[in-house]
Length: 430
Image (tube, rainbow, N blue to C red; front, side, top):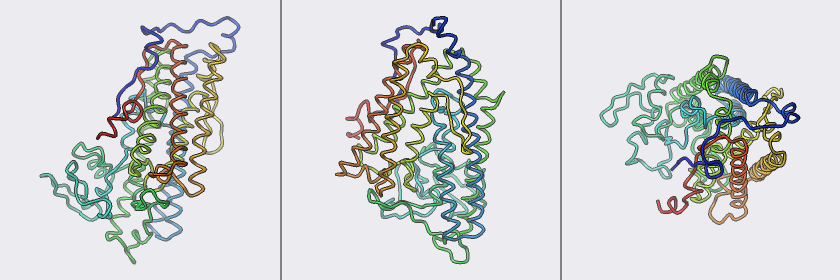
């Protein structure tokens, strides 16, 4: 269960919105608060443009798989999906604090999902029904007409519009019909290995109408194409939101500079603490549950966590490396903090580096054959410690973010929390 946690309230008291007083010498070397906020928006635009570019590469690979199913085209589509996650995960520090992004994010990155809504599943592990979700095993790919809970849905043509209709249908968040993770499931299939090594093993013949496995191969291709096309249009929407005059940039520009800095620190703290440290990492470790793994079909979770953390570091340093290798740099929050308190800026940089080092340790573990779901297995003390080290680094990093909020007098900034960190007994008693 998520909730909001006030950072800095006890240190700050009433919200203050005056710019931090600086000496004349420091002012000459320190960018304006407005310049920092403007550059933050420029990085967002670059990241979402890269997310769109890599999604279009994925779209081409998906088209090739559908036209000519083979081991090679399936592997190429999987590799394109993994590459598409790299820029997108770095965007997530923009989700919290920016309502335009947060309201949109569920269309492209919702998880976990009840994959039986989409396609066939192994009932041995998945089951056959859910009291909470009447669409738990709807299997859109196998059923051109759905009659569930008094609803009749025409699924004879699988189109982006149909997926939009089905996404979170019945207000069930696990009915994820679109986005990266629906595509991931269609490319890998279920991971039936539990907390043992191994990802999903969907065969390419699930798309081969001449040698069809899994049934409904053409409709499966239709679903995969519709989901990929919808991802493209959703990302095009978000790129537009960050261009000049776009909704997200305009919303940021409507705020004062100090309010803009509060948006930046809200994103840094919320992603690090409640979302990444809590819901995506600590929760799975506590429950030893591979279903709590973010990229659970592909076993790509280590990279998703790494690039989430990288996105926070990008925001603080005002720096982003584009997929073509171009460096986007400019006025940063780090510059402002250094102007106010050089030791505090040094501390934040060191904590960010520590978090990245712990993220790299999880990446190295996956490369050695023990990805995230293996790390969180019951009894895997060494793997569990790697995950806990990452959580601890994120929590410590958030503590320094709290100090920055106080130093820059940003007011009562609200940062997402997580029961897994703040009330673990409630999680274990459920």
